[in-house]
Image (cartoon, rainbow, N blue to C red; front, side):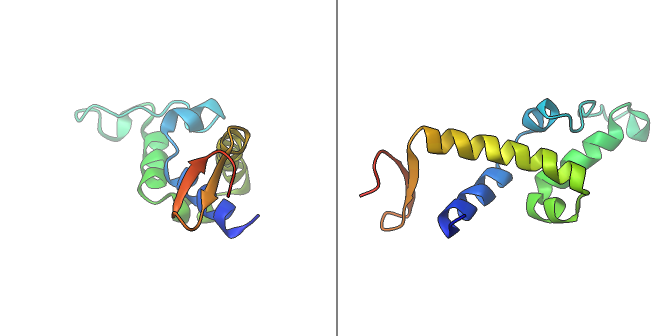
Length: 103
C-alpha cells in the first residue's frame, strides 16, 4: 500500500456511516434513544459504540477487538475497491483525487 492509498483509507475510515457498519453486522440494534429512555433503551450499548467510533474512528479502530476491526476494515476495502475500479487516483501535484488516467 502506498502512502496515497493509506491516506485514502484513512479518509474512508473517517467517513463511514452507521448503516455501512450495520450492513456488515456491527451494532445492528443501534438507534438514537429518545431522551426519556436513558440507559434502558434496547440499542443503547450499540449506540454508545457507534458514538465512540464516529467521534474518533482512528482511536476506536486501533483499540477495538480483532473481529470488530475486521468488519470495519471490510467497509474500507469495499470503498477502496470501488474507487480504484472507477478510475479514481490521487494526484499529488493537485493535492486531490481525480478521475481518469494519472498524468
